[in-house]
Length: 321
Ligand code: MN
Image (tube, rainbow, N blue to C red; front, side):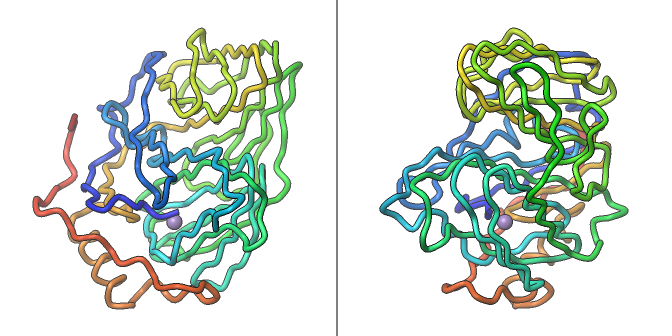
C-alpha cells in the first residue's frame, strides 16, 4: 500500500535511544489516515512515542470494511525503496502487480512479501469480483544498510508454518517463533506472527529476551500481559521478555511484531526508507521523472504522484520526540 498522507513529514527512526531494554506495557493509539472515500487506516507505527519495533517501521491496520458495493482497495502504482512490505489479510483478497511483472492474488493468512531493495513500484487492488469485506494490515520492514540496495523481488507464500497450543494458533509470517520458521526472506533478526486466540484461551508465548516486541490487536478482545488491547491499538512491550501471557474471553486476532533493536538511523518519507535527505530527494525525483522504479503493467489508471517534500531538511540524529 502507499502512504496516502497528502503532506507526509520526514521522520528519523531507529537507534537505541527509543528502545526500552526492560519489559514495559505501553498502549499506543492509532493516528487515523484517510484512504479515500469513507475508508480510514489506523497507523500504529511510526507513533508519537515509538517509531520502530525491531526493523518494523510502519504498521497500518484497516477494516473490517464493507466493500460489497464499492471497488474496495484501489491503490495505484507507487514506488518503494529501502524496505520490505508485508501484506497480511484477515478478510478479502488483494491483487498485487509490480514493476518486475509479478502478478499475485494474496488471500487471508497468506504472505505477500515485497522486497523493494534499491527500487520497485507496485499497485494493489481488490479484484473486480470480490467478497463483501476487507480487513488487513500493511507492514513495512526497514532493510539494513548492507542490503538496502539489493535487487527487488516479490514472494508469495500461501502456506506458512503454524505453532499451536490449546486455544492458540500462531502463524509465523516472518522470521522464527518457537523454532518454526517462515519461508519469507528476512534481512535482520525479527519475527512477525498472527495469533488466533479462541474464546477462553490462556496461553504463554515463548519470546527472545534480546528482541523488542509489540502486539497489534486486529479483532476480538484479548489481554496481553494483563493489558486489554482493543482492536486497532497496539501494546509496546520493550525487550527482556522470555514469554508473553495471553488471554481472551472471545475469539481474538493479534499480530506479534518483534526483532533485534534496529541500531541504524533511518530517514523515512512517503514510501521511501533511506539514510539521508539527499537519498529521499533523489528517490522522489527519479519517481517523478519515470526513472529507476520501472513500470507496473496491467493497472488501469495513472501512477500516484509524489507529494511535495517538506521545507525543513532533516538529518539522521539522536532522540527526537
Ligand atoms: Mn506500497
